[in-house]
Length: 243
Image 1: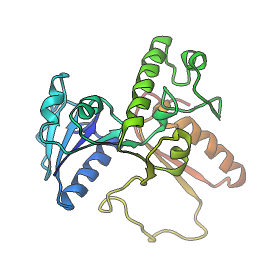
Image 2: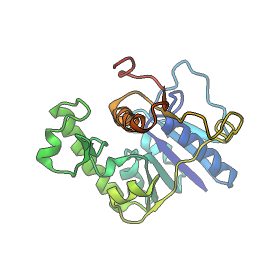
Image 3: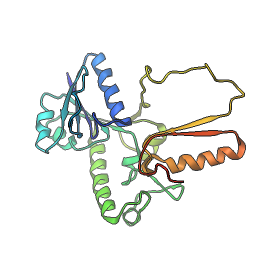
């Protein structure tokens, strides 16, 4: 059985969604499935990815037929919905993996001024939570409508947290928490004691979408109770160096 994993961004790019797609593909191969990963990032000068699964670059729109050839199930990560329509036309069941509030908010943020907000045409058109313009909001609304359609016809909607599943409120849903690579992340008690100052770590791209501003505000609240608390920020992006 051939399973296609579609990730809008994949190798040679590096990040959370790329790592998730790679771990998922390797896990499915370990269970006996044939796996093909289709990404939207050109290989460029990077060497081919040596993995026990196929990889395909999803460039021009006509590539959809090529990457869907022989596929029995589509797993759309992100969710990336570009292939969903073609998969439905071929009778291929689709599983959408929701790793953010895209299904509840056109801008994929879901909050403004420190509070959660609901979808409304007028409200969403005037939204500037990511510094976007009106033209961007029109694009986000079109993507949001397409995603809601894809969710309604999906064989299953997978969410990475119960809070996200509650906010998006899709049919045929379940919660499967994000995975991790135990060869990279593993518990260590070498330096942990009860007297150690609490250390919090933010890991991600330094953009509004990742909630770095929320992390900073939350840490400020922590420091009111624990002045010795520390925050470590790991990542790069346009907000790097801003005070």
